[in-house]
Amino acid sequence: MTKISARAAAFERSRIRVMFELAEAHGGDLVRLEVGEPDFDTPEHVIDAAARAARDGATHYTSGAGIPDLRAAIADRTERETGVSVNPVTGVSVTNGAMEALSLALAAIAEPDDEVLIPTPAWPNYSNQAKLAGATPVEVPLPADEGFDLAPDRVVEELTRDTAAVVLTTPSNPTGRVYDEDAVRAVVEAAADHDAYIIADEVYARLTYGGDHRRVASYADYEGLLTVNSCSKTYAMTGWRIGWLVGPSDVVEAATNLGESTTACPSSVGQHAALAALTGTQEPVRKMRAAFRERRERLVKRVEEIPKISCPHPEGAFYAFLDVSALDGTSVDVAERLLSEYGVVTAPGAGFGDAGEGYLRLSFANSTERIELGLDRIERMVRDERD
Image 1 (cartoon, rainbow, N blue to C red):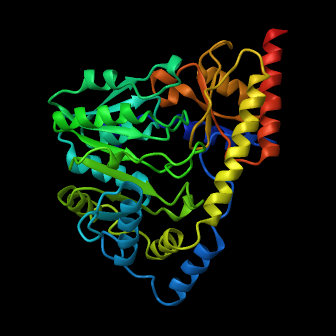
Image 2 (tube, helix red, strand yellow; image 1 turned 120 degrees about the vertical axis):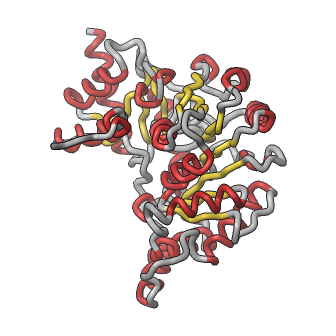
């Protein structure tokens, strides 16, 4: 007899992964724009550091919170970017990617039946991880006519005594929006008034195109601020699975203790790679960001030439959120039709919350040639509908 828990049975799969697997089964000459992964290789000096560490014997368990040198580098980076002093011993925990940092943080702070507020459209794992922690995710739809900027009044309206945390992602996945500073400050202050945590997911923080932006942890002297980050997007290290959690010592300690029962510790070799990424030359990051900026401009300009679709101008990350509401069917219908009939793989907006319905997320972390080909095919689909 097979028995599946109610939690697992009710779990909703990510639409991104669903489209990924549909594409794998479909095969053929597909333009893959659904997954948020840099098309660059990990920088050579990072790979060299990992290989050297492995040869030198750094292949054993580490502390559950990570090796001291990496935690010190994370604390130093955080202080330089936010102006907030971080104790590398008690305020930093290295994790198996940002996903584990988010999951452990929510498990550490949320009681059963607590609520987690998630401004949407948003990455779908926030809701799923809240459910795994026993909490209830509460979507806070952001206004499409304002480019999905953070609307503090909408968030504040949902804050209650049951709110465990508010998740803020800036730049946003999937919209590429960098939230207005005054709006972020208002949400942080309101969360503090309600004794709710702020979880700042800043994995795209160094991929902005209008200059650097202010980190969430710098907005207020509030001990309820938790920051999640990783090497994945910034350094093209998605497969290395190294992320981290920065915050008050009691939460960080609790998250680390929970991690001992799931993964014990992050990859030892991966941690040495991350150390080299954070402390070595940042020129690869600058080159990647410049390439993404150029692709963004070409994509936005091209979309403007295609009838019936549009997209807000991405300010960060490497996503364009295309408004396809004028086309036939739901966002899932459009995404599946685009895959099966035109060979372009995208992520349907419905996978990012109800506020994303009518949109498709396209990743421009791909070569210019493939992006152009994908847009050619999208234009053909749009024009075929008009004929």
